[in-house]
Image (tube, rainbow, N blue to C red):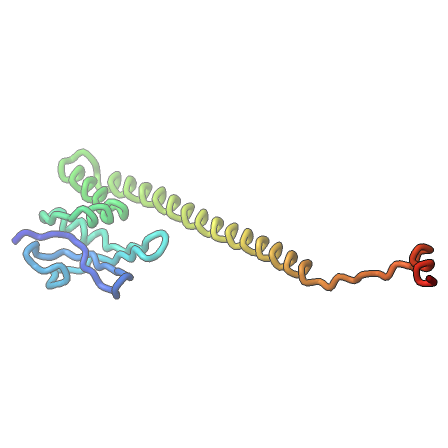
Length: 167
Protein backbone atom coordinates (compact mmCIF):
# COMPACT_ATOMS: atom_id res chain seq x y z
CA UNK A 1 0.00 0.00 0.00
CA UNK A 2 1.75 3.20 -1.14
CA UNK A 3 1.50 5.94 1.48
CA UNK A 4 1.67 9.65 0.75
CA UNK A 5 2.08 12.58 3.10
CA UNK A 6 -0.24 15.18 1.67
CA UNK A 7 -2.65 17.99 2.44
CA UNK A 8 -6.32 17.47 3.16
CA UNK A 9 -8.40 20.59 2.56
CA UNK A 10 -10.81 21.96 5.12
CA UNK A 11 -12.32 25.41 5.64
CA UNK A 12 -14.81 27.36 3.62
CA UNK A 13 -14.66 28.64 0.06
CA UNK A 14 -11.85 31.16 -0.35
CA UNK A 15 -10.47 30.44 3.15
CA UNK A 16 -8.55 27.17 2.88
CA UNK A 17 -7.27 25.36 5.94
CA UNK A 18 -5.31 22.15 5.57
CA UNK A 19 -4.50 19.07 7.61
CA UNK A 20 -1.17 17.39 6.87
CA UNK A 21 -1.98 13.68 6.78
CA UNK A 22 -0.42 10.34 5.94
CA UNK A 23 -2.88 8.64 3.60
CA UNK A 24 -3.12 5.81 1.15
CA UNK A 25 -2.25 7.18 -2.28
CA UNK A 26 -5.47 5.70 -3.71
CA UNK A 27 -7.73 7.50 -1.21
CA UNK A 28 -9.61 10.67 -2.16
CA UNK A 29 -8.07 14.04 -1.36
CA UNK A 30 -10.41 14.65 1.57
CA UNK A 31 -11.12 10.99 2.22
CA UNK A 32 -9.72 8.42 4.64
CA UNK A 33 -6.29 8.95 6.11
CA UNK A 34 -4.00 6.87 8.28
CA UNK A 35 -2.74 9.57 10.66
CA UNK A 36 -3.08 13.32 11.06
CA UNK A 37 0.42 14.81 11.30
CA UNK A 38 -0.38 18.50 11.65
CA UNK A 39 -2.15 21.59 10.33
CA UNK A 40 -1.33 24.30 7.81
CA UNK A 41 -3.15 27.64 7.63
CA UNK A 42 -2.00 29.77 4.66
CA UNK A 43 -4.43 32.60 5.52
CA UNK A 44 -2.16 34.09 8.20
CA UNK A 45 1.07 35.98 7.59
CA UNK A 46 3.41 34.17 8.12
CA UNK A 47 1.51 30.95 7.50
CA UNK A 48 0.62 28.94 10.62
CA UNK A 49 2.14 25.47 10.58
CA UNK A 50 1.87 22.97 13.41
CA UNK A 51 3.49 19.62 12.73
CA UNK A 52 4.27 16.49 14.75
CA UNK A 53 7.86 16.11 13.60
CA UNK A 54 8.47 12.72 15.21
CA UNK A 55 5.41 11.11 13.58
CA UNK A 56 6.36 12.66 10.24
CA UNK A 57 9.88 11.23 10.50
CA UNK A 58 8.43 7.81 11.39
CA UNK A 59 6.29 7.85 8.25
CA UNK A 60 9.19 9.05 6.10
CA UNK A 61 11.40 6.23 7.42
CA UNK A 62 8.66 3.74 6.61
CA UNK A 63 8.60 4.87 2.97
CA UNK A 64 5.87 7.51 2.79
CA UNK A 65 6.36 9.93 -0.12
CA UNK A 66 5.45 13.59 0.49
CA UNK A 67 3.76 15.65 -2.21
CA UNK A 68 5.52 18.83 -3.34
CA UNK A 69 3.63 21.14 -0.98
CA UNK A 70 3.88 18.69 1.91
CA UNK A 71 7.61 18.37 1.24
CA UNK A 72 7.95 22.14 1.56
CA UNK A 73 6.07 22.11 4.86
CA UNK A 74 8.11 19.19 6.20
CA UNK A 75 11.30 20.98 5.19
CA UNK A 76 10.16 24.24 6.79
CA UNK A 77 9.48 22.53 10.12
CA UNK A 78 12.66 20.40 10.00
CA UNK A 79 11.16 16.93 9.58
CA UNK A 80 13.26 16.22 6.49
CA UNK A 81 16.42 17.36 8.30
CA UNK A 82 15.62 15.14 11.28
CA UNK A 83 15.03 12.20 8.91
CA UNK A 84 18.37 12.91 7.23
CA UNK A 85 20.16 13.06 10.58
CA UNK A 86 18.47 9.81 11.67
CA UNK A 87 19.85 8.18 8.53
CA UNK A 88 23.33 9.39 9.50
CA UNK A 89 22.89 7.87 12.95
CA UNK A 90 21.84 4.53 11.44
CA UNK A 91 24.91 4.52 9.21
CA UNK A 92 27.19 5.40 12.12
CA UNK A 93 28.32 8.79 10.80
CA UNK A 94 26.81 10.60 13.81
CA UNK A 95 25.88 9.76 17.35
CA UNK A 96 22.35 10.34 18.60
CA UNK A 97 23.54 13.28 20.75
CA UNK A 98 25.32 14.97 17.82
CA UNK A 99 22.25 14.61 15.62
CA UNK A 100 19.99 16.03 18.35
CA UNK A 101 22.40 18.95 18.91
CA UNK A 102 22.43 19.79 15.20
CA UNK A 103 18.64 19.62 15.02
CA UNK A 104 18.11 21.87 18.06
CA UNK A 105 20.65 24.39 16.71
CA UNK A 106 18.78 24.45 13.40
CA UNK A 107 15.44 24.88 15.20
CA UNK A 108 16.76 27.85 17.21
CA UNK A 109 18.11 29.51 14.06
CA UNK A 110 14.82 28.94 12.24
CA UNK A 111 12.81 30.31 15.18
CA UNK A 112 14.99 33.44 15.14
CA UNK A 113 14.26 33.98 11.45
CA UNK A 114 10.52 33.55 11.95
CA UNK A 115 10.37 35.97 14.89
CA UNK A 116 12.40 38.51 12.91
CA UNK A 117 9.90 38.27 10.06
CA UNK A 118 6.96 38.69 12.43
CA UNK A 119 8.60 41.76 13.99
CA UNK A 120 9.31 43.27 10.56
CA UNK A 121 5.71 42.73 9.49
CA UNK A 122 4.33 44.33 12.65
CA UNK A 123 6.73 47.28 12.29
CA UNK A 124 5.71 47.77 8.66
CA UNK A 125 2.05 47.64 9.67
CA UNK A 126 2.60 50.25 12.39
CA UNK A 127 4.48 52.51 9.94
CA UNK A 128 1.65 52.22 7.43
CA UNK A 129 -0.89 53.14 10.10
CA UNK A 130 1.19 56.15 11.16
CA UNK A 131 1.48 57.37 7.55
CA UNK A 132 -2.26 56.93 7.02
CA UNK A 133 -2.98 58.89 10.20
CA UNK A 134 -0.67 61.74 9.13
CA UNK A 135 -2.31 61.87 5.69
CA UNK A 136 -5.76 61.91 7.29
CA UNK A 137 -4.72 64.75 9.61
CA UNK A 138 -3.45 66.76 6.62
CA UNK A 139 -6.70 66.20 4.71
CA UNK A 140 -8.76 67.23 7.74
CA UNK A 141 -6.67 70.38 8.25
CA UNK A 142 -7.13 71.32 4.59
CA UNK A 143 -10.88 70.67 4.82
CA UNK A 144 -11.18 72.85 7.94
CA UNK A 145 -9.20 75.65 6.30
CA UNK A 146 -11.40 75.52 3.18
CA UNK A 147 -14.63 75.66 5.19
CA UNK A 148 -13.57 78.43 7.56
CA UNK A 149 -15.71 81.57 7.18
CA UNK A 150 -13.86 84.42 5.49
CA UNK A 151 -14.24 87.68 7.43
CA UNK A 152 -14.09 90.74 5.20
CA UNK A 153 -13.14 93.93 6.97
CA UNK A 154 -14.88 97.10 5.94
CA UNK A 155 -12.35 99.56 4.65
CA UNK A 156 -12.79 103.18 5.75
CA UNK A 157 -14.30 105.37 3.08
CA UNK A 158 -11.69 107.23 1.10
CA UNK A 159 -12.02 110.80 -0.13
CA UNK A 160 -12.92 109.78 -3.64
CA UNK A 161 -15.80 107.73 -2.41
CA UNK A 162 -16.90 110.56 -0.12
CA UNK A 163 -16.92 113.04 -2.99
CA UNK A 164 -18.95 110.68 -5.11
CA UNK A 165 -21.50 110.38 -2.37
CA UNK A 166 -21.89 114.13 -2.08
CA UNK A 167 -22.58 114.60 -5.73
